[in-house]
Length: 88
Image (cartoon, rainbow, N blue to C red):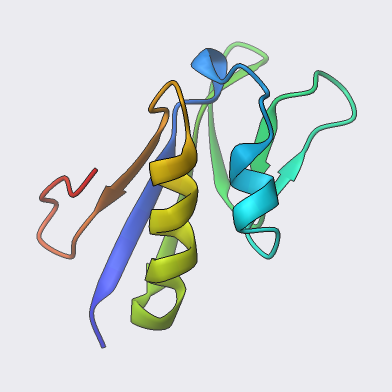
């Protein structure tokens, strides 16, 4: 099965909630700062701030996350294929 990677540029998230609305199995809104969080992701930090969230997914999980990425008005959700090529 093909593997994909989701990368969330969290600092630039505006907290609109579109991703959580279209893909609640993968996305939720943080009660701390109102930005979206990618459930089960690995957090890359600079100091004490999360600068990126990353999650590897399989083909069946691609569609809801592509919808989340497409719904993001500030384009902070990125999808990559198994070769590292950026899809969105």
